[in-house]
Length: 304
Image (cartoon, rainbow, N blue to C red; front, side):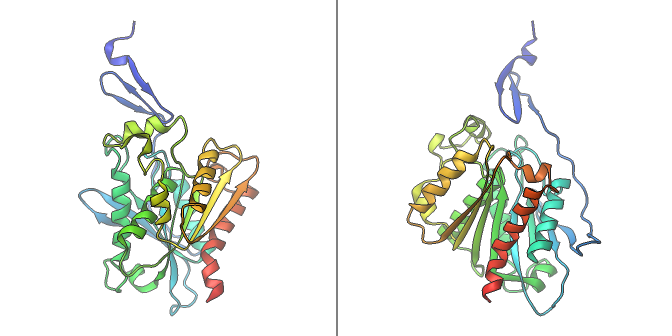
């Protein structure tokens, strides 16, 4: 028989919990340093937002063609089930660098605290702190010179995938409720977002000891929160075979009838699974996803 230490208490999608309190994650997180892309001209660097708690970000600056023209800003929140992946991992470095190049936007990819070292709601609070740090540059005297010099704070976008899409939604709600002085959040971009209504609900509840149950608005957005999204436009990506597709569609339908006065668009990729664009970044549909993501940001540019 297994010893007490090896007896299983919970088995979730991304980790298992033993009776002695040990948590075994199924995925490790590899990190790479910032680098400059010689092909696209995108430069990147890491910045510290807070030392306690530890919050940082990777900033991506596209090739500057006209120094007098300010660039839209994308605040990106990576996915990974709230417990793995990183703004510094190879897949997200590649993705956000590509998004910066394709959309000609300066991108800030936030590095937030992960479970179990920092249980939820750390990811929400860290990401909000990161967005507030970005906003601290709106008067052009913030701590980072790239944001001071190049960012257009009237054209800010919040985006993320999977769990990062869930966090991005909560950020847009906070912007609409609390405001973000000096900043205009134009759009919210959700790629295969995680919301309540699947077998993963209990995993989220376990990761967030202070949760409000299955109706917690971070897990299952309320109509009141949806009506207060602090942006004008929303783009949601679905993948046909994604286990989160149905809850994403639920979010879309609830948003439309919530009383929110913005515009919501959806894009669905047939025959694809959850975050396929990270596993197969060079496939035709992944390229289409990136191009549509960038086009959503550039929509405002085309109207200027």
